[in-house]
Each structure stands twice: as structure tokens, then as C-alpha cells.
Image (cartoon, rainbow, N blue to C red; front, side, top):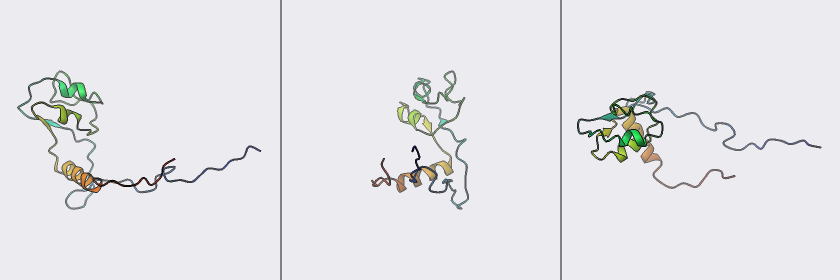
Length: 112
């Protein structure tokens, strides 16, 4: 009749352990609460607040975060005075690790 079976493919379930960023001593670090800083060159143009996909930069005071930062970098890229930046060493280390690990093109493991 109407019987069916599930196909077991990568992606149905996590097929690898969740990666936790590590510090220089190889200890796991939590970068979720890290958000960009704003230096004194900020001209308060509000571009960062307007471009933030999460609406997390306070429009009335762009040096403050009112929500979660997903670290997309949109505020940093758009800032005309380069006033937005990350300075957390663990985040910077993690960012460089990702850039190094994923800079080469790879073939998809699965395409459905």
C-alpha cells in the first residue's frame, strides 16, 4: 500500500559535532555575546543601524547594541569612517580560522 521509508542522508541529523571556537590555549570560548565596538571617529550617520539585519544597533546611540549580533559584518563594511570594529581576540582568532579553513572551493558533499 502506502508504506514508505526514510532515506538516510547527511543533513537529516547532525553528521558532525557542533564546533566551538577555541582560544589560543585550545579552550572552548563562547563568542555569541561579542558585538562590534564604535570608535571616536563615528559621525553618527546611522548607516550601521539601518543596515543591521537584526535591528540590533540602537538608532539613538549607535555605540549601543539593543539586540543580538550575528556577526555578519554589514555595519563594519558600510561604515564610511571605519568606526565599527571587532576587537575581541577570541572572535578575531575564530574569524581567521574560518577564513583559512574555507577559502578554497570544495565540491558539495550532497546535493538533492
